[in-house]
Length: 339
Image (cartoon, rainbow, N blue to C red; front, top):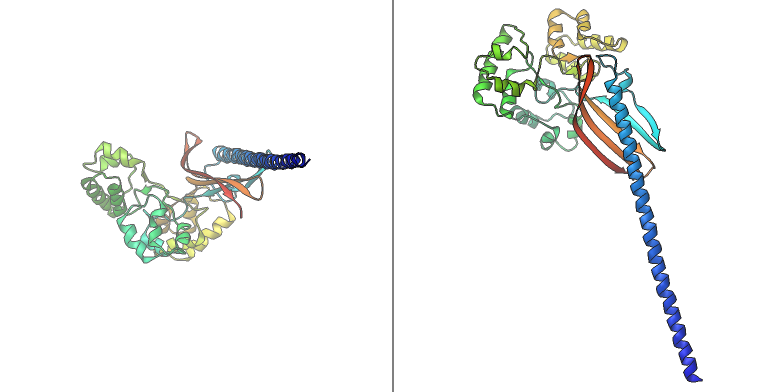
């Protein structure tokens, strides 16, 4: 009898241990299933958000390509926020002018000095270096000033052959490693043309500048322009006032331009000729344009309050053969996790 009871005890222990082991295995498998389901849902949300962001991006690009005007203002449909929903995912498309700020490589240093966040350490750095990206100036500024200055300037845009300092062209040549001889020759020739108030086109450059090799010319051509860089319809009022002040003109000119801009869509820069003197207009017109060549396209897609997907890019847009052409200059996409 005792032996029988002992065997029953062993059997009970074995059964209990079997139940415990099976329970552990079940819980492990259940956790594994739940984790897999969670990961699958997370991945599905990721794919859905990315597809919605890409769709929003295509909507923004198509809007820019189908713009019927060759001038841009803040009132244009292209520059209004676009809200939408695809497969239950909300998206927001934001299109902004990216080039209507002073250029750190080409604009007058005295204009840059008046911008928020300026630091005197920047002056020496900018005089001696060509800045392909604004991250290069980060170490020259206190941490709190860098975002302020970065938001006020740009590196997008070409050197104005008839307006920007010949010294800026020399710095560009050095950056492109095209040789001291060409930079010196070209800079001296441009100084003479400035003194004579002579205007030349880019295509005339090889014929006007003695010793300029055609191979070198083709390399620098894409970096040159004879048009203004900043869209007068988007330039910040404080920047416009600084430019007028640095040029030595009456500050009321900026007020007249801003007042005119508020009441009108400036379709052609020649419209400004009616609100300022000829000499003032000639100086100002070289700096500005009425179309936005460089554009930020930002898309945010969100499926929940925990995560979102963002696409940010900078586009270069030009009007050729009666249609808009778009080139992607930079692209970044990432998933954002909300706190």
